[in-house]
Length: 227
Image (cartoon, rainbow, N blue to C red; front, side, top):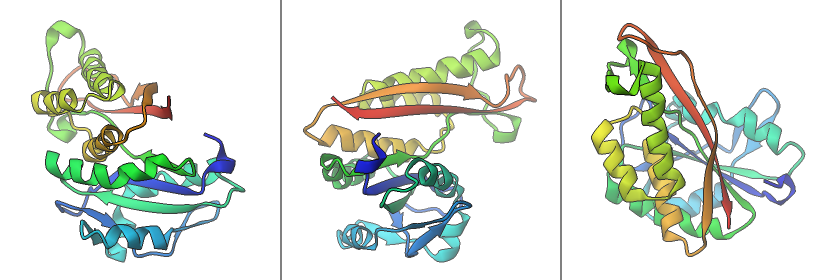
């Protein structure tokens, strides 16, 4: 990423508190960070709203959602000194058809070099705290299985194989909070005529789980570039 070329950042994150079958937009004009405020692109936000596919977040709903908030300091620091605006999008509990719809709406923005997308997600939440215990002992200790399972999903994302991604999620029901934002972005890549490269560059777990009494959250980071 060349910060000097970025004029607009699209930030897609999952909803943890509000149930919706749509994507929702912010009505704020600025977001505050510890380093300074980020202006929202109210014109682009309004253009998206006029498609009829989006709802508005209330101020309280906007402030409650950490999947968007936690990305803001990083975005600010990476683009510090650059003139850019933000388009935050809360992605609801979408079905495949919904992800395809929103993917097509966002796809056109991939054509412009001035646009940069950030997809906010973690990966597997495993253990008692999350009531998720999927495990195949032949893969080794729990944390090894979790990594194997996460990387299986990561491989589908890297391959930009949306059907394999959906089959994977149906089989393992991996507790990936940002599965819907990921699905929307994969659909956007699919709908675009350009070719993209998706590459995961980092993976970690909060705790090496070994039993159901343990809890662990996985984290992964990927970079998407035009070919």
